[in-house]
Image (cartoon, rainbow, N blue to C red; front, side, top):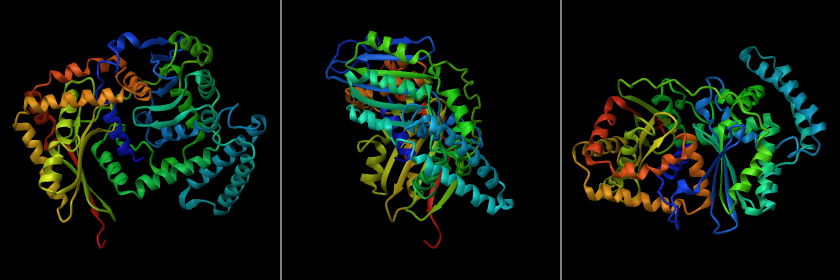
Length: 498
C-alpha cells in the first residue's frame, strides 16, 4: 500500500471517536481497564464477550520522525527485521547459527566500507567480499525457519498478523481465538526480549526494491515524497519513512540494534487487548511474561520546529504519467483547537461524493477525475492540510488548482450553514459507531490515541468539541492557515517528448 494511502487511512480511522461502545450504555472510561507494569509498559484492556475472539495491538512510540539524517529508514527496516524471529523462533539451531551471523556481519561491514569509497573502490575486493557474503548467506539458509511467527499464529487460528511503520509510531497486530492469548504473550514477549536480526543484508535489498517500486518508479509516491521534502525545511517529517536510497543501502546493523534497544522498550509502548478476556487474568499473564523486560532511557522528543513559512513554495516532478497536483498548508495538530476545526473542514471539502470539492469539480464542472483532502504526514507534531487532485483531460492542472482556491475563498467568506455542520456530526458519529463495532478497530484506536495524544481518553471529548465549532471558527481558521504564504504546491508533469 502506498504511503499516502496509509496516511489517508489513518486520518480517516482515527479522526474522531464516538463516546459510546456500540450496543452498550456504559461509557468507555468505565470499561477500559488501565494498568502499568513495573517496567513502564502500559496496558489498555477492554472486555467484549460477543464472540470468543481477541484483537491485540502493540504500539511503540517511535517512527521515522525519531531518525536522524544519514540514518533514515531505520524504523521501517526494523519493523521488517522483527518478523525474522528470535533465539528460539525462526531457527533450527541458534548455537550453530550465531557464528555464521557474526561472520556475515564482519564481511558486510567490510563490503559496505569499500563500496562507500565511490570511484576509489577496489573492484576485485568488492567481488571477493560479495562472493563470500553470498556463500555465507546460502549456508545460513539451511539453519533458519522462514516465517515461523506467521506459521504459528496461522495454525492457532490467528488472522490479520501484520505490522506498520509511520512517521509517528510502529505497531504489531494480530487477532486470535481468546483461548490462544497465552501463546501470543509467549511469542511477543520473546520477540521483545530476544530478537535476532537475521537475513539483515538481504532484507536491506528487499527494502531498496520496495523503494524503487513505491517511490522512484511510481509517480504518486515520487510526487508525495518530493512534496513533503519541499514543505519541511527543518522538521524530520520531511524525511521519507522508507528512507533515502543511499541511506538504506548502507544502514549499519549495529545502528539498527541500537535503535531497537533504545525505542523498543516496555516504557515506550502501549499494549491493547480487546475482546473475550478477563482483565484481571490478562494483567497477571502480562506481568508473568513481560515484566522482566528492562525499561530504557527514552530520548527526548523532537524539539525542532518547522519555521513559519514566508512565501509559497512550488515544485515540479517530471514523470511519464498523467498530471496531478498536491497543495499543502501547515497547521497545528491535536490537541490544538484549530485541529478540531480542520476535522470539520476536511469533511466539508473533501469527504466523499457529497463533499463540496467532489460535487463542484468532479460532477458539475467535470474538470477532475478525483479530488480529496486529508492531513499528513503525522499527528505527533504540527502537520499539513492537503488538497490532492487529478485533472480530467483535456482540462489542466492549472484549472484544478484555481478551482481549489475558489472553494477555499468560499470557505473563508461564506459561513457554513447549520445544516452542513449537523451533517458533519451525523456522518462522524455513524462512521465511528461502525468502526468501533470491531475488536480490531477498538484495539488500534485505543493504542493510537494513547501513543499520539498521551492519553486514550482524548477521544472521549472529541465529539463534544466538534459540536461547539461555529461557522465563524471555520471561516477564521481558513483565513489564518489557508493562505498563499503558508502553502506548498507540487505538480506532476509529463516529461518532455512523452
